[in-house]
Each structure stands twice: as structure tokens, then as C-alpha cells.
Amino acid sequence: MITLFVIANAARQPRVAGLRLGCLVALAMAGTLFAHAAARAQTQPLPRGAEKAPEIIRPLLGAWDLEQAGASRKCTIVLGVEDAPHGRQLRFPATCRRALPVLETAMTWTATPKGLPILNDAQGKALITFEEKGTDAALQGKGTDGNQYLLDPKSYPRAARRPRPSAAEVAATAAQRPTTVDPSRAPAMDSLPGRYAVMRQQNREACRIALNAGPVGRAPAAIESGCQDTGLLIFDPVAWRYEAGRLTLLARKGHSVELVFENGQWRKDPAIGSTLMLRKLAN
Image (cartoon, rainbow, N blue to C red; front, side):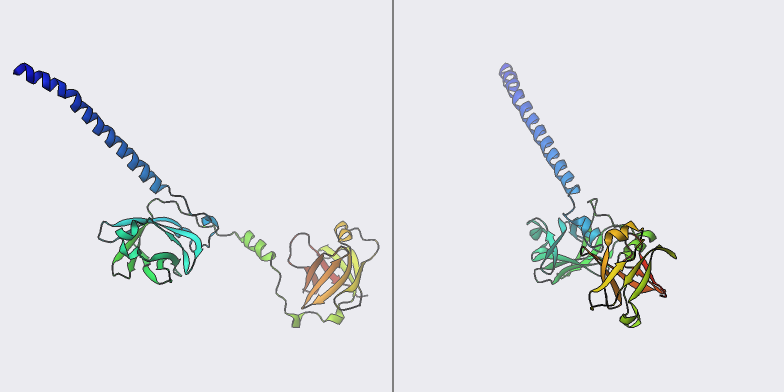
């Protein structure tokens, strides 16, 4: 009997070892899959177009963990940049509707004036409004179901805020905009015909140009002989017009340059590229 027990036990040992090995392999595979899933959750890419989105919504774009306060229910949602009826696209797995019933009709999202998110239904009605930040990075909000919710950014990627423009950048941007002109304070139309000194630098005459009287909208203009300004010669103004306080020189090939009246003379506007000023001569 003892011999038979030993033989049977020996025969059973490989089977037990095999089962143990199989369990270990299954556990290892499950752990690997879980790790990969966790890694994917933490590396969800930003929605396409996030870097070009309006500044107020840029920090909100991307994945968040939404959870009901005081409960274990949570779900990962994505605040998208794409336009949708009554807001922007809101994405999440179908299982979220079971985990968090408040999401049953959720379709879009918008932002408050303070830059906090609101989750809405298809008609734009708010379902969860986030109004403040908690003690950590999570946002706190209340749902129409009466429950409190937390929106946790975790370590999901976010679009960086654009840096504030420097004083030089602000000035350059302003220079590219046309100057607003009050026509009632601009020179009268009949005061414009005459001879003008053309300047690239203040009080340094480069050429002279004649703006002659003629048909409104396209009166004749001509550069006087002896001009050495290559840029003006290439431009070759042949006509001018005056409208709403803005003087326009028209080139032979059809392009044009506008000038506005400031400090007793005309200057190119917007002030982009080479400087151009006109000062009317006494005779």
C-alpha cells in the first residue's frame, strides 16, 4: 500500500507543478496587461488642435478622471477641442454611463468665464458645473443629480499656456494694424495737390513727388527728376487718391501704399517695412 501511495503521489507532482506554473504565467500576463493599460491611461495624447485652441480652454483640453465624491465610481473623460452643437466634443467609454449615471445624456462641454469646465447634455443644459478647485489639483463641482463630483487631472498631458508677449512683440503687432483716422480732423481734399519731399528718415529728403489735381479717385502723380531712391523708382507712383483721411499712392503696376497725416506730414500706414514720409513743400 505504501508503495502504491508513493507511486501515485509521484505521478501527481508534475501535474501540480504544471498547474502552479500555469497560474504564475497567467498572473504575470495579467500584471503586464494592467501595467500597459495604466501606461496608456497616463499617456493619452492631447486632442488634435489643442495648441491652437483659445487660451481660456487650453489648460482644460485632454483627459481627466471624473469621480463621484465619497464613492469609488470613476471614469476617464476627454475634453476635446472640436466644435459641437452647444459646446465642444466630450468623449468617454460607454461603460462610463453605467458607472456614473449623470453622464447618461452628456454630449458636450463648455467653460465658465473663470475657465472652469461644465459638462452638458445635447441641448446645452448643464449636468455638472465645476466652480472651484479642491485642496489638490482636482476641480470640485455639483451635478444635477445632487451629487458632488471631482475632476482630477492626474498626470495627463496638458497644453501649455502661451507666454505673455514682450513689449517689443506688442509694439510690433500694433504697428501692423492700420491707424484709426478721424476724417473730420484730417486735411481737406483741396489742400493735397502740390509738391512733396519724400523722406525715409525724419528731415532727410530723398526725392520729390508731385501730386497733381485731377479726377477724384485717380488724380495724376509723378516723381520729379533727380530721384535716387531705388525703392520709390521701382514703385513708380503714377496716381493718387484721398478717402476718409487716408492718402493712397498708386503704382504703375497697380499696387498701392497708404499714408495717414500726423504731426504736419504724411507717413506710411501700417508702419511695416521701409519707412516712407511725405512733407508738403511751400511751392
